[in-house]
Image 1 (tube, protein in one colour):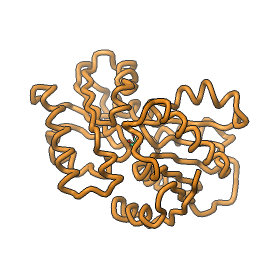
Image 2 (cartoon, protein in one colour; image 1 turned 60 degrees about the vertical axis):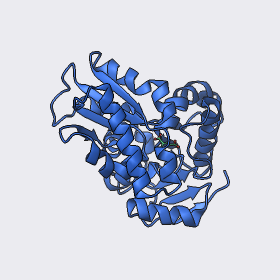
Image 3 (tube, rainbow, N blue to C red; image 1 turned 90 degrees about the horizontal axis):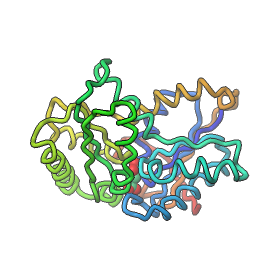
Image 4 (cartoon, helix red, strand yellow; image 1 turned 120 degrees about the vertical axis):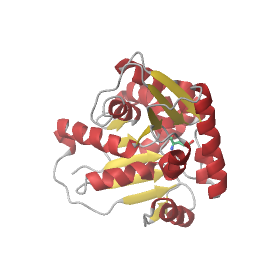
Length: 278
Ligand code: DGL
C-alpha cells in the first residue's frame, strides 16, 4: 500500500505516528522531523509556510504520494495555502497533503463518551502561539457547534522545551502555568473538554492530567487522526494498491543519534533516525 509521509517540526509527530502505526500495521510510514529548525510555534507565518513546503517536498521525493502534517502549527498556518495555491500548480499535483486539525475537531466535538457535545460546553485548546493566533481551532469548532465556549490557551515555550530536553520540573511548571491561565479565563470552572492542540503535548499528557480538573475530558489527537485517516483511505482506493511493505523510515534535520535517544525517552520507541539535510 502507498507509503504515507508524516511531518512534524520535531518529536511531536511521533505521538501521531505511534497511533497510526498501531491502527495501520500494513502501511509503510516515512517520518520527517525538522528537529534542526524546531520549534516552529514562534516563527513567522512566511517561514512556517516555506519550511513546511520544503518538508513536504522531501517526503514526496522519498516516494510518498500522501503526506500528513502531523503538526498543528504547520496545519494551521500552511495547509490551506499549500493545498490551494501551490500543490495544484506544482509538479506534485497528483499527490495529496492532509492536516490534523479538522480530524481532531471532528472527534472532539462529537464523541464524548459517544454522546454529542452539548451546545454550551466549554472546550479548552492548548497549543503553540501561532496555532492559537490563527484561530483555526475556534473556527472549526464553531462550524460544528456555534455556541461552544472555546478557551484558547497559548503554551508559548512548551514544545521548544520538550525539543530542548528540559527537565520534568521545568515542563511541569510550564504546564501548571498554562492550565492556571486557562482556568482563570473560566473563573475556575472546569472545561468539559480539552484538546492538546500541539502534537508535542501528549508527551507531557500526564502533567496536563495532573493540573486539569478530573472531570475535564482530554482528547487524544493520535487516535482522532488515525480514525479520520482510515476513513479517508477507504474513500481513496488510489492509496490502497498492493505494494511490498518495507520498514518505516525516520528522517531528521537534526542530530540523528540524539533524536533517536529522545524518541526512546519520550515515547518508548526505538527508532533508527537518519540525518536528512532537506
Ligand atoms: N508539534 C507542533 C504542533 O503540533 C509544533 C511545535 C513547534 O514546533 O512549535 O504544533
